[in-house]
Length: 311
Length: 311
Image (cartoon, rainbow over all chains, first blue to last red; front, side):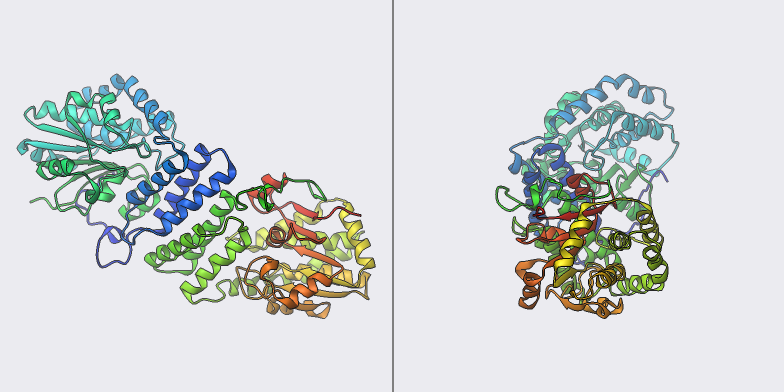
């Protein structure tokens, strides 16, 4: 399966009200595994690893029953930063992937140049870039990334999502594009460039996280990727690996509310915004077994999803 | 490697004092995985699974820094019993393995009957039976159990552990044998029978847990196995999957202190007694990667260990 669009999937644990708790056992286990991997990678002393993990367990055990996975991930990373005094443990990895994808920019742009439908190719490329995620895949290597991207670009599919998105973009004055991970951000640039070419009058905002968290982008990464040539780069003011509206700053919220079209990249943005009270076009790869089950999709399949029915 | 006897292995995290914390990241992760597996097996509702797991995380996050794995396991099982009102979730599994091993009693006894060194064969069989452990191996099946036992019985080894143990037994009036798991208890009976045959005057006590926890034996299981024909069956008064002396009842402690020889089965008893201020003969299989690393042994290899140097 290559796309889901307005497919009514079971939002069970994502929905507020009617449920006692939003987070699942799988999400809790996954977040704790990520914390353990982070300890093994970044904390040398065995006893310190255990002490850090106990702090994570206390923090996790005490979450509110409405907590969603990106908020928990943010809290765990705060514990990590406090424990290690390392404000950006994935800094080097982010630089590596930014540079890696930038160095292959020509090759990837070739996919768009040679495509019959350039917009579709740019969306596929942006989605494919979402594979660069150390949260979901901690031991990611370049070969895996390139492999997944080539695989995705070969697949053919059509979706009314693309038609609707283009129609909305044609009528829009302001687009807000919510970025996700470092490395991936270079692929976002291709799509933004393509949008800019099709709709030159459109004012485009590109939002990053407010502070480093996992391998999520900051304004720094967006500028490294060259996004600022096509869009105004802003940040959401938070240290969550998602877009948690209740925590975003006023400046971001104003842009979010005033945008005619919002495109959201990645699972963290999806989890934090799927219930939002406005129309959002979500683009991401299905990256964990919990989402595979929830969405009825395979690993690394593209999800194109709009949270509001088309008028 | 087939035995460790007075081998000076790194007791690092097992030692009191000089260390900040006794439990390791690996043990924490393993205990939480067991809790998650228990949730999946015994709690039907997805949200209840997550709520139970959050309780486990709170309990685990708040453990004292000197907590050892069997104590944490006991605390987690208390949370489980409270959450589900199921006082013995492994009751059926325990019955199954008790009956399974009893039904093959003749076959296993054949190993001893045909052995050149009956005592060695009985020790090997008792050690081999330690493979029946749902804590370490949650999806254990009979084929695995039989396979490991046959494999172990084929191996040849000699150890001064056996000579010293027999010498101590010959001089002893009272033996305390600390049992471990259901199913395994039938194999313990073979060794106890052999000891009784060699030293008919010896008074033998066989200790079980005070209450059901994981697949550990209670007095009920010991009697099902027929241990009471050869030993006085007692319990330690606790619900921990080990022998946590600070929590054991007075009656048990009196027998523990007055025994001339103590034989301890299983990793949980080893973890809780390795620092005890008396000589103990430990028999167990090396069942987890953490112990493999600590002891420098392979999976399911027999550990014969005495915590005090031979006089």
